[in-house]
Image (cartoon, rainbow, N blue to C red):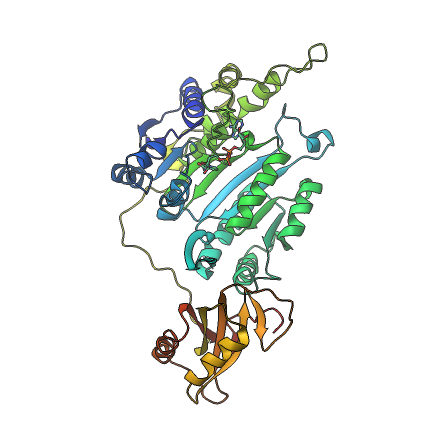
Length: 482
Ligand code: NAD
């Protein structure tokens, strides 16, 4: 069976070489198709960070095993790591944080064992990086959370919890503040939870969750989070088990899956032979299970504990032993591979794979049934101005017809007209809320776009959002102080 391999940037080639040597020593029946991604591709001027051939190879075999890839800083190029996740719809990022033998941490020394599986949403959220400069002083990032995307992730989290034999699935969120976006993420979590009554499902606001993970990690089992919050908390969880060198991950989709370590290219130690390949090796074992090679995966995983114990040498006359090199790790993993016969009860059989190779199909539209009428009751216009909110209101009001009224102006999300506090500091970007007068009913998009066109010559319109209601529910947030 063939899989695509991107060796990566920075420490990537060193740790990938180490992992593939362990695979070879264990006789893993895979062949590798090297693909080009990352720094060298960017340097050739391809801002996607991967070649067309890479895309075709990965889409052909459905599995990519990758080392970390550098994202060029500055403008233009997008992160190829994120592109790979989004392009191939790997909507669930599974990360495993497990206390390992021989890897001492503050928590393991305190007798607190960690075995947390984190499911991070992988496509939506601010990670969409849909960004626009609105004025020279104001940049915006749009944050989309979708019902189909959240349902997909939560279903995967509960299925993984079932396979793990977990007791608890916890949703992290910030729905107390972001009631529509994180509110949708949380609502869909409990919708899916109803199908898994044997699992305890609960939720925690993400800041509280961060503290709980750091102080009581042993209480958590499967944790599911939106993209950015999951990104941050997964590094916190990596610290619980000894650092980024010990945190494997899988990006799971319906068609294509990408296996990689949680960490990046570690430019500070690249080329020094100091990189720890454990996280990539454990990610590789996840991949082996995924393609039906359960025996190889179990045998290599069984080598990890004894190898790490052997490498964690005691203090020598009070002086800590030197940090193991990548070569030390590789040798230790190979030397500690248990006999094949110990795993005779398991089989390496591609027919047992969790993964079905991709079938070419048109792009899929994911949608859920519309349960309530959707109406438009107005628009928020975002306009550029350094005048006072009162002055902005005086310019806008004469432009409104008798169906519409100006209801509120906010600045950075805080109401500034009608005046709420003289101490609210402003920037040159106002949100002007225009709503239908009572009894007018549904407004059309063209009516509101015509209004925006009439306002723009008077005060520059930067962007616009419609004010939707779904059934009886308002589909837009109030301003702070409104
Ligand atoms: P990083 O994860 O590369 O490094 C953070 C710290 O952890 C560094 O001190 C590093 O030496 C250490 N570290 C990381 N992996 C290690 C390992 N295997 N063994 C020993 N020490 C290890 O994070 P960063 O410095 O913020 O990012 C560097 C680059 O990596 C950036 O270009 C970033 O975009 C990229 N990155 C890529 C991925 C990915 O490919 N999935 C993920 C994160 C960051």
